[in-house]
Image 1 (cartoon, rainbow, N blue to C red):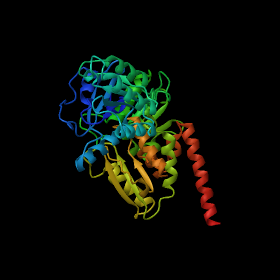
Image 2: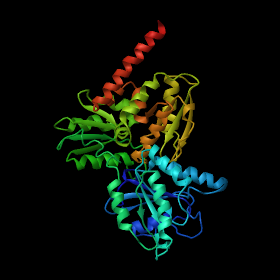
Image 3: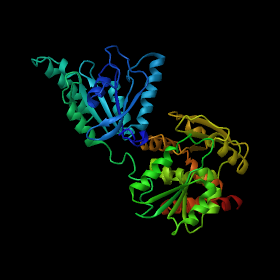
Image 4: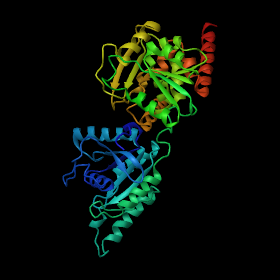
Length: 428
């Protein structure tokens, strides 16, 4: 369970007001004291993440969020972080307390869930506090019935304290979890059992000492899971290693930074692509990123490009996102293109200020968050391109990098035709 990458786990986030019992519910659902519990409102400040096993689903990422009714300037910041969590939420638990009732805060959360297409389960918590004789219980429940009927919702009466209906919440969670929270395979559909995939993994200053980076490890595992063979080599040896094989490999996958060199070394009749291109498909939507390549043709002096990286690694002097790609774009398009950078969970609201979003491979993000970012950019009409696709475009080999993906290749070639037609029309 612990070996499952965070970005491949379904993300279950718990939302609600302060002191409705969100943390207590997480602890009961997981049978562990994962979240700090206190009667003091606002105990949970920043979102708390915990990778763990939740039966019957399996490995998941549980997220405990700050109360949506937090107060003051600091409270507003906590609420903003809570809403940012929605970008990555595959399934939400909306917790409402019988003590505090339901109103505008819950209505706003429900609206956000529906707008973002997040499936959710509504839990009416602390039912153990209702009058056991039933004198007060009926009017209270009637009030909640009216609220839930208004929003066309079902709800589960539960108690984290008394462990009422905890198993039912687990069952409903498994039932409502989207089946497409991640793609089934990174490249299992590109190779057949017994075929060989050559993986070119440069060992440079950015490579973690003694380890391979996550996309490389996950790709190797995916190849083995599909009964194929992974041959791992450095870029200087790729040609000699291929020549040693009795049969040509089905595909060569390279670190995107080595695209140009590897493309020259690998015969044209062998498929070739990059890890970053694979992950554009695995974590997001390949066609959307390919459409971003069309925007590369239109970049001009004075444009601003947002570079978004999912991790906060220590940057090297030849860092790919802050140095190499900007330098290539400056040299090939214009030295007057501006770059701004965000990292980790940051993703700005002012996307309309940019001509293009240049996004990393997203190995540290789950698919829901990548798709959410793409949707936010789409709403304001800003194209998004992935590192690997951008590098292939800059080196003139995007056609080859997309050859393993016929639909995306056709889209790119059609975009090229449209760009040429637009250029002709401008001249005329």
